Image (cartoon, rainbow, N blue to C red):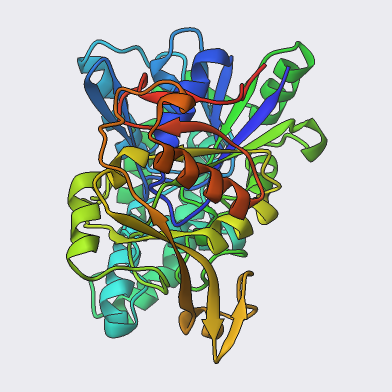
Length: 428
């Protein structure tokens, strides 16, 4: 039985939540392997919308065990707020498990994140201010706090004091802010210990034993390929690895156990925050895509920057992740456009290339080369068979598939779980 990784192929917000939720109907485990509550996804079930930031999508599916992997950074307040929210709406979150090795976002890192962004002024990176970057930095600097530390009070207090020895100097001397009391931080974290205790597990052991037993595991990425710390549009990226390789390091499951990698791609392109975006539309067409696509951040509410589909980015994501399949979302949003441009290449300093530029400077100056595709006017939200789509819509999907070099196995034509056209089976 397969281990399936689901990743975003653009700058996030591709609809991974819906894709993961749909695939999660046929799996035993859904594990989130990177990121934190700096991104979110929306799942619509029977017309009811659920917004998640930390919880894996599988938490809503009976019989599925949702796991937060070691590659995730966890804001405990946010986590339990989400759990209480879905429980208040009649859903059960009691099966949720958390890796003992996952790092915790302490309150001082949220403060540091927001303060640093303000300090940077015009050079700010557009972070969500939720402490994600500083917590990953602590992890790499080996001064981070992990879930397991909640159960050794002396170690926890020692780690908090050690982290704040440095950070309080920064708050006082650089940012002109009051110092933070380490005992108050430790007390707050310890208050969650007994609620976390029944959830804490060895993520690697559980998942490998599940695969040995023939169970199906779905690995869910936060953010997307172009926000990857190594392979994205650095420095305008996230602090983790939302590409397929991150599924292995973020859970403790080896690469030889991964059977397929599914990339989620929007029929057009969006991004939130700062950074280069070659196909961005700043005119009425971009505003139309934003309005009709509901392009506002699940976590921040920020309006997303919108543009035409960038096939160079999609092809790059297929290569970096080793994609076996693509799931296209929001095809219905393109209904009503007379023509639909697709970016098939870039021009940089008079040179045309179908591949990602070598340097970020070149990417920043890349001019999209468009191919015009005919549009369609028919309502496709009720279509469930590919052959029933308007011919122009079929041609659009097939052209994106050709440019990506990867088959498009499913197509979303609406926000609901059922609003999907299946072309190839993704699991089983």
